[in-house]
Amino acid sequence: LTPKRLAGTRILVTAGPTLEEIDPVRFISNHSSGKMGYAIARQARLRGAEVTLVTGPTCIAPPLGVDVVRVQSAQQMREAVRERLEKTDVVIKAAAVADYRPKLRAGNKVKKETESLTIELEKNPDILAELGACKGKRILVGFAAETQDLVRNAGVKLEKKNLDMVVANDVSQEGAGFNVDTNIAKLLFRDGRVEELPIMEKEELAGVILEHVEHLRGGERG
Ligand code: PMT
Image 1: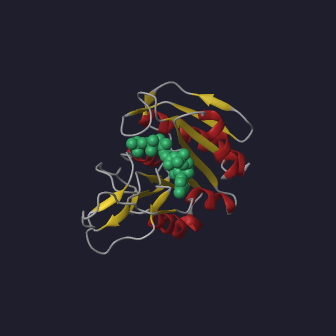
Image 2: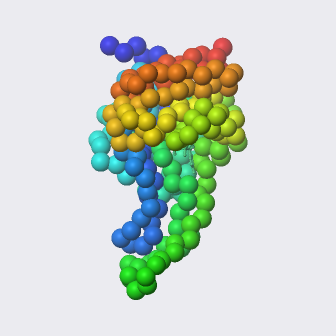
């Protein structure tokens, strides 16, 4: 039986991709399956936390005992997270939020009348950076999906977004990142520590992340 070390802790996890509509039938998205975030939500629940899972569209079943909030776009994810922030002690952002969305969403299906088509994109809000700016006593855990300079780029995100911990994964490595059951992560902390983890099931990595959250919470309380 898993010890309920997170009993009384309110954890909000984001998972999956966001989906940004071009017209009623087309969209921009990414390869996130939701597996990583759902594993964190499940393991947090097993450890006794009160869990809210804000999820983009996925094909997997959410864990039992978790409050599930379904969203589609980055803007909807931002609203869902913001609305629940007051009642949250820990935020873990495993979602792969689309950095850009089409500037205009066509009301009708775009016709293929031209040889080429340009879609203008505009930047989505960085939800995690916004949370970092009003962090308070909350613990913020971000992910960093990189294909080069993993530790350096993840370190910049830790700093810029005012995070307590970053789970950095090189998504170009086999067995890591999008849409597989395993991941290979390095954990970065504010004091400069980097913990290098071997390949492991996402469920197991979720457990390791939550053990660190327990310690970070301990420091916050003590
Ligand atoms: O879902 P799976 O198939 O299991 O795949 C898991 C995963 C690869 C999606 C996951 O391990 C992962 O790396 N998630 C983060 C993906 C990502 O968007 O990384 P990023 O480096 O672009 O963003 C850094 C952090 O900022 C992330 O915590 C992200 O949620 C957050 N962010 C990014 C952009 C944005 N506009 N708002 C955000 O909050």
